[in-house]
Image (cartoon, rainbow, N blue to C red; front, side, top):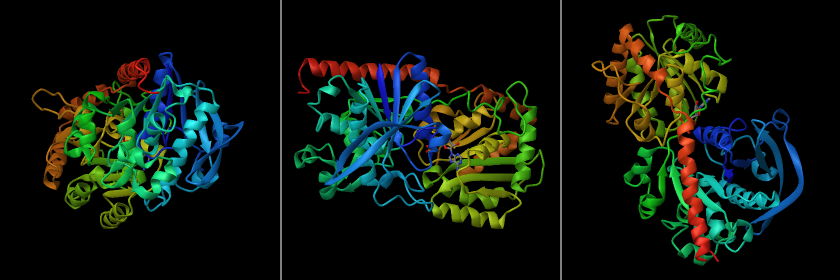
Length: 494
Ligand code: ADP
């Protein structure tokens, strides 16, 4: 199949969270299975053109955002030597310090215009490139207008005659909801489109609803989250999802084990793997030194690598730090985003600097050292579509402590001292007491080296690879393509 991925982020070029990991990794597995996969993302200032060898294509293109004609260029390079990546370059919208907003975590005031532009430009770019996709796979709210354009503005465009769309929800909490009266003409939709109940959401214009309502197939990133968002966790979209129940797929994300591999990871003080874990002790020592903690193998070293967002359970972490550090427990936190969480964590650090270390930047190498050096990984998320961090922690033999929600339920099984099964610790009541109790339970098991050894063996043995998920994606693409062909046969689309 010809598959086009369109997204706001993609590793290794630009990343703020798990979306980038998925968009940069899934194509490699699709390519291995013989598909022609290509990727379109914005050309942000952060993307280092020289480092990645970006070349500008000779075409100059433009689209309208409202009445403004916006010019853009396409730059390109290869991912892994065989997957073309196209970057939409427009200096006005993408040449700024942040991806979605400034360093305080507040989104740019014109994100609506930026992603209307990006959706329109992606549709124009694929035509200019003469790449006829069987599937346009759109990710999250930033690309929600693309399925809508295919079924409205571009409905009679022969170029997309055999193109189906798939829309993946990575996080239903970010929907892109804007004032309707000005957004409709800016995005190029008519009042009739709006009245069709496919764009409107509580009197606003909603990008995600556009994606969900117009796309051929909907997916999200874990089976449990796919069920949860058809109920109260749907943040208002549950009704739309229930009406499309048979089109909703839940496919678990994987990680790239060639990248997240403690045996060969060059960021680490020492390498290790399941059968020889000795290097992990050096990594722990390195991390304790880096954090200014007492170097003590018996200290229970907890870690967090996360966006600073209340979704991730920071209220529970903040409430329990004071109690936990009274034990021989050390905590290292790496995160960026919400200013309130950042300031609170830094304040706590000033109180407990010998037991709590806080790093407030986006730091990929340090994240590797934390995954490798810590004993356990805290991820008490209030909700979690899939979560990659807990899967990465497992790969480094670091035991996740999680709330039972979304993809965390699908990947982490509570450790049982009777059966010795389980790869982490799970609590299922979102309260500080439950979280703290579970950390203490983990600490008790940590003190028993036989049990902890079994548990870390189980963690290393847990594999969430793309090899399984990619086949489910293929089945989903087949379903989307079959639907399009049927629609064309019955002339529904013209
Ligand atoms: P989400 O996509 O909701 O942010 P995921 O768990 O799916 O959460 O993915 C988070 C990804 O971002 C992981 O690869 C994690 O290591 C990485 N990450 C998050 N914050 C940071 C940070 N401050 N520095 C480095 N990597 C980070």
